[in-house]
Length: 467
Image 1 (cartoon, one colour):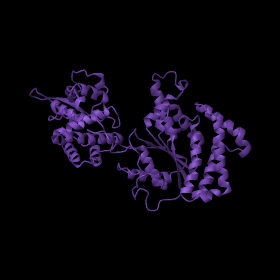
Image 2 (cartoon, helix red, strand yellow; image 1 turned 90 degrees about the horizontal axis):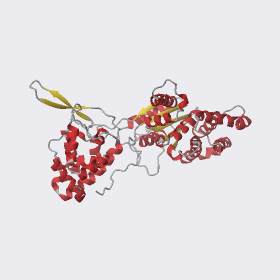
Image 3 (cartoon, one colour; image 1 turned 135 degrees about the vertical axis):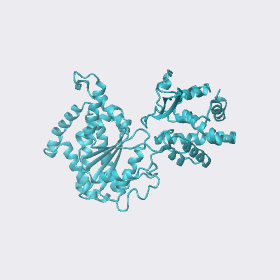
Image 4 (cartoon, helix red, strand yellow; image 1 turned 180 degrees about the horizontal axis):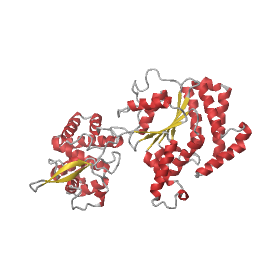
């Protein structure tokens, strides 16, 4: 099945997930908090963190990439303050640096100059003091890089103190590295944007870094960059960052009586992250996901059929993944698949055939191991349907490839007074961003969908590749 994507996964400055109110609220907090301050923006992979950060940055100082779409007129407001300077740092690009914080300091130095040029403030950088302090930031970066900071946080502190003793004591009296950076950044900001100016540094994709790199960067932030005019905004999957920190906690720090080392490491790691991130904001899943899917569908006929499915099902949000990235992938697949089957026969463009197509495309896109079995043996659909419709208390022992998945609903047995047995569906409230949830499960219980109908759609879609 050849698929041509319709929706791009490229981060966007345009709010397409109804999060503008949240962007505006956090922008206000960033402008009005008392630095040093660090915000964490938590969301799973595919939740739209980078887009959210881009929108937040635009709301603060109007920064945008040349190829960005035109953002909402209300995103930044009519008269935004001009005392915020922003810097963007993609952490994963520098994860192989022995000293990630040095790369960050270098980016701050470079992007402040670029910000000044874009905002027609470049002439202020000709000030002798401003040039001197910008140069001194470079000096610190170069000198710190001479001695690659090892992994241990105690060694980071040790080398910082050694650098201060050998370099700053002679040049700047009793000032520390952090104090010197604070003075330098404050001086430049004052020159560029006034006495109340603040620097907002966006750190994206921390959760894509190796555990060691993520931990080294966080240590560098804690030791060197608690600056009086600086606010950090870190985009991350909180659990992945906690796992990275936990993996880096030395075993010698565990109490002897600790029975669960992993649980202890997690508690310590969460406390460590809380110490660095003063406030953690969470990007909630998109609800209802079916409504968003229909808004993204371009084919009017397909959109109408999907609308009918939503009206027939239990709940608008319970048969589609609420993760934006996964939902975009599903939209791309079903748009193209719909065109393929309708060209074969018009009957595939409505009713039970579209519902069957949605199930097929979902399994094809997100559960390749299941689809391979299904493609080889059409009866596998009946097997899936029995699994979805089975009670938790039933006698069946399901294979590992099904036991590793979660169902968003379960069948609960209800014994009636006349001795008959009935079942009702009960929501199980799984993690909405988990990749193990079989979201399309409620559609498989549809009485109109059977193995014969589904196989017919499968053959129309994949031809001879279906047995």
